[in-house]
Length: 354
Ligand code: NAD
Ligand code: IPM
Ligand code: MN
Image (cartoon, rainbow, N blue to C red):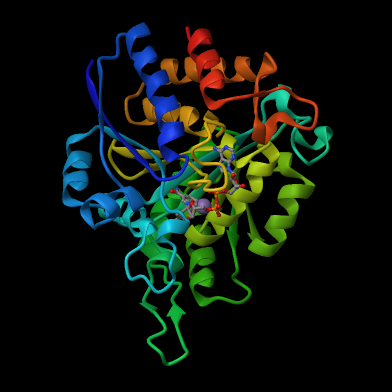
């Protein structure tokens, strides 16, 4: 087997955690003879600096030539002037939209050795196994937008079409079939018209999946239930914006934003894999970022785009064993833990890979 993987490190801690994931992919490629060919490209602020465009044509072409993309993070204070018409985040949004990556899968699990690191009580965390299915190419992120042009008014529009809701609902129900047969659909149908269309459409799709239990939960209450009874969730199906927010909230269950990976996929095998966290400007450049989210994203890449569940599991087990050995980056170290660097943690994962 050979496969072409494009690395898009981006900004802030992006290059640090993508480098960690690259080392893991290279080792996995040797151990399992995967024949992975790794290349790098520009996205986000780094691409704006070099090419004046957060998603330059050369990067789009490299994505088209690749089987999958591993991305770090984009954005940072250097490019955050609210009056600037070009922003790093636009590169990421265009990538998702242009490649029709409408489904963002964000699995949330708690490693047994980490239950004491989360702010929630350990007894609430032991059985947590949630899959967020976040709609990624619609909703308020992509609806009609008007910047304030001096009139003192700006707007964003939350738009959903039935077909967009249907296809993401099918991703969620299919996933639930392979899991614990429950879907929690999140909306704000008590206020928003687009969310009433969302709920009606989900109900219609649910009729094709009589063996799956479906509950509708309003997003504000969902934010509370996630902290109150996190192990009660199986698949959580959410519109773009709510899925973004709730999955960051759920990162507290796993101990840190640095723990959670994601897969952005569409109809084919191609996908973009990235940590759910951002460029973490507050810790960038110091070699202390938690590389777990990026390494686990590489595992998702192998599973979803390359069909290598066996290798993905090998990587996930090596990460789990590294935490079990007591290694902790600063974000999950706790008051008395010994703190290791990005490099040390990655070295342990490499040593434990088999
Ligand atoms: P952030 O996710 O970058 O950071 C939030 C907090 O989590 C910070 O305290 C940070 O230090 C910590 N954190 C994040 N990743 C970590 C890691 N791997 N290890 C240890 N700690 C980690 O969110 P923010 O500060 O709100 O956003 C910063 C920039 O990142 C913004 O420009 C935003 O637009 C961008 N962003 C990009 C993506 C992406 O590229 N997918 C995602 C989210 C935010
Ligand atoms: C994420 C990020 C992005 C989003 C931003 C950077 C556009 O927060 O991937 O979760 O909101 O989707
Ligand atoms: Mn986010």
